Length: 352
Image (cartoon, rainbow, N blue to C red; front, top):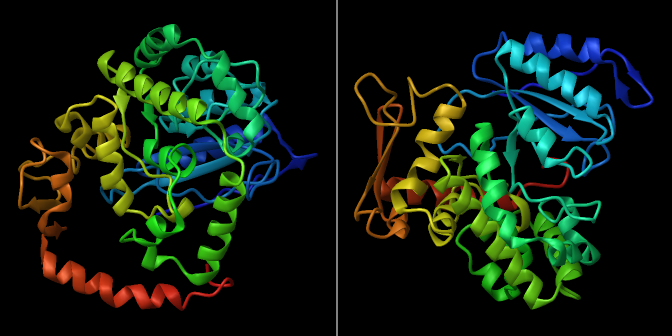
C-alpha cells in the first residue's frame, strides 16, 4: 500500500520545515510507515515534488506505507528537521547518502542506507547512485582508501542503520559486461515490454560503448563486497534488495541473484536468507507477523527441493509456495508466469 504526500507550500522548490514535519507526523498514523527521502533534481523528480515510493527489497508482502519526500541535496537543515520529526513520530527513514549530506550526517540521524554507504571522496557524485552512469565519476575509486573500509563498516553497524546494498544491480549493470545475447537469455527478460527493452538496451549501449577501466570495475565490486561483509561482521543489519526493474533485472528473479551475491561477498547462506526475511521484517516492525516461521505468524512459506544452507542457489529449486495459507505448487507458479508473460508484451508506453 503506497501513497504520496504533496507539500502544501513550495517556495522555489524548497518545502517549509514546519509543514514538512507536519506531513511526516501525519504519516505516523499509518501502519508500518517508512519515510523515503529522495534528492531533488534526480531521475523523474524535481525539487519540492513528492513522489510515490516502491518496495525497498523486503521479500515478504507486509503492508508498507511510504511517505516519500524529495529535497535538494543542499537542504541539510531541512533534511535533519524531517528526519528528527520522523524519529519523534516513530517512522523509519530510508534514502541514499548524497555526498553533500555525507555519510557521517546520515549515520548520526540513523537513516537507513540504500545502495552501499561509502567513504567520502573528492568527487561530488557517488558511483553508488545515478552518478554511476558518468565515466568521469569512476575516478573517485582511485581515492578510496581500502584500509578505511573496516572503520566505515563499524561506524555503520554502531549507528544501527539498515543497509540495502543492491549488489546485483550495480554489479551486473555497470561492473560486469554482458552481451545482448546473455541479457536476452535471462528468464525474466520475457516480462519486459518492447518499448522498455528498447530504452534499456539504448542505455546499456551508451554506458558500455566507453566503460570505466576493468581495474576500476573490479575494485568497485571488491570494495562493495568488503563493505557488506564488514558491516555484517560488525553486527550491522544487511537487507536483500534488487532496485529493479532497472536494466533487465526483474523483481523476484533478482532477489535470488542478490542472495548469491551476498554469499559471494562473504555472508553465510543463513545470513543471506535472514537478509531477505527476518531483517526486513524487523526493519518494518513487522516481525510479530512475518519474517520467520512460527505459531501465529502469517503463512507465507517457500518449500524447497534442496537445502539453501548448502548452496544458496537452491532457493530457486522450489517445490511450491504458500501465500497467506494458500498452497501453490511449482507447476502452478510456472503456468501463471507463462500466462502473464504475453500480457507484459502488450503493455504500451502510456500504460507503464
